[in-house]
Length: 527
Image (cartoon, rainbow, N blue to C red; front, side, top):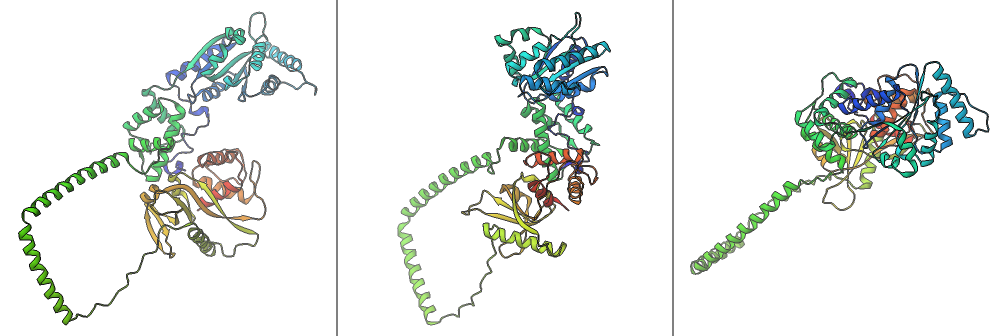
């Protein structure tokens, strides 16, 4: 989305555990040192615990890059597995040759033990990292304990790292796992970032993403980030990513405290269009106005009672003058001015049928202008998405927005033909163009966006390894939107990862496959 605007090579605040983005705060450096010490000194069992989003998985992936060439590693990310599945996964990660088809636990363990002895004889070490270990069953944890028995008289053949949320400490404290808990020689509880590290964390991610200093964060913005995140890296990523979208939508190169506040409100779902302070101020003024009006009525009433005789005389005179004037007008009628009909402006906000008909009309006009003659095997389909308001600036084809916060009854829509720098060109009930401001769009944004997508009769799914003009079209849009750096024409791993990031940004199923829903949204953004 905003990567090319700010000069990034990729999104700096992605939630994926990329080890390049590991920021070694004092806490994360201590955790890494504990891991390296436990592995290199062959301490057997090591546990790393911490709250959700503190960077444990990223730390694990970064650890693999710090191990020397003689240390073999097996990273197990799926914690919901059986003991047999665990043994199979470990052997596959280590590259242990398979055993005969009718495999048992003993077959797997014997093959693993043979591998570990050969590795140790060659001067090597071996480590298993189990992420999300708090979800492992007691049977699997007991199987892991049994693996620790693979040792020589003096050295452990296998180092086992259990990484999990804080609940892992309670799991290991269970009486049934006492033997395992007592074997853990190295423990570290990973804490969130301190306030002084938040600025370094944000700037580190901006630099790794390829930033050249075009984007700045105000000092007050860091205070707001810490107040919301309490130093949790995942929360920092989420709020900064949303703040960059807001800055991109406003075309600003400095992220302010106000942008962070808006991002926090959106993440929390507080999207009320009414400012409570404004509402409170208005209510206070209403009370003041009411009291003042009552006071004026009382004063006027008292004054009127005191001057009732003079008022009666005045109205008597006025009534006589009025009677004479009316009699004169009756005798001398004046010509009536010609009636002029004031043209009534067509409605800007449309109902469902009006907006849908207008959407098809705009698409047809655009197709005639740019791609005359839609093939017979193409069906025009209405596709709807739930889109955050900042994303409307990247749409390149007509679309309609479901509106909220209006006084009219029934669903109302805004039909937009084109997005401009500071707003958009809407189409009213008469089919005429009318400018609308960005403030109006954001104020009444109802999240549901509809557009027209031409579907070919053949079912199109793009996945890894495919080469076709459609793949190049997808890559072109991803490059334009800053998700990808080049078009290759081949659906390679870079394209797969870019599609997944795109899908996550727009709340689509993040499977890396370009199906009907993903393709229609990419089509909507195509220049």
